[in-house]
Image (tube, rainbow, N blue to C red; front, side):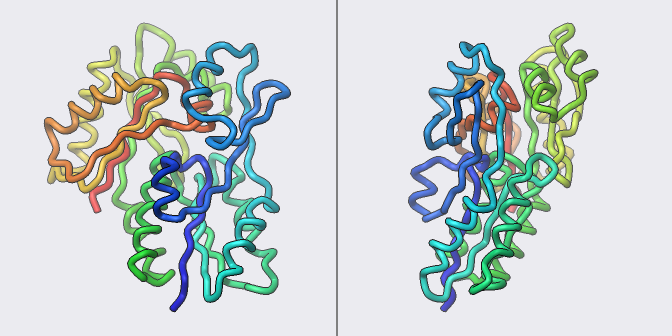
Length: 285
């Protein structure tokens, strides 16, 4: 029987305890403050990152893992007999992480075809939900083909909305245009963002005030999910638990939700989204 192992990167924002429980291997991205370099969620945790984001004179930069770093992980896992790997990563339009993983998979001359690299076309728990589902399916003895089909189905039935305090961080990180950054800073305008089908940041609406923005997210979810039935929901935040709780309560009042949990955005995702961000990651399957 084939042993399926799951690999991801640190931008999946999966809590450490859950990664350990499901034996998910993780390759970290890097975050830089000036000349200081940290490994995302390894040598720099969220609770250390957000105060540093405010106090540091340097705007953080992020960088992808190298193919060699992925190769080391793949080779270690493939030492186990009859092993295949499913490696699920940050959207290729947002980072070169997927390309690094894909290149590493081609360097395994002794075990060709044993690593399946997947572009999540998402970020944060948009990746994490796919990875966790894949790891649980692997535990149940599903084949690689069955797990890859499950990931595809989930990806097609997944909805993401996030609300940022400012577009400054997305703009400085090169993830959104400068004109949008200026507009988002005016008159208490709160931009509601999502990820399109390729994983690019997309502006959905601009609403004045936090409460109206949450109300608009509810309208958008209702249009996406007419049944108002949610299988799993993860509410994420960047050092803004209070805002996350308001979003969770609002959604729970109007939707039937089977499972709900909180996620803290890790340093790399937080560096681009900025402090105060809240997000809803919703799956209907």
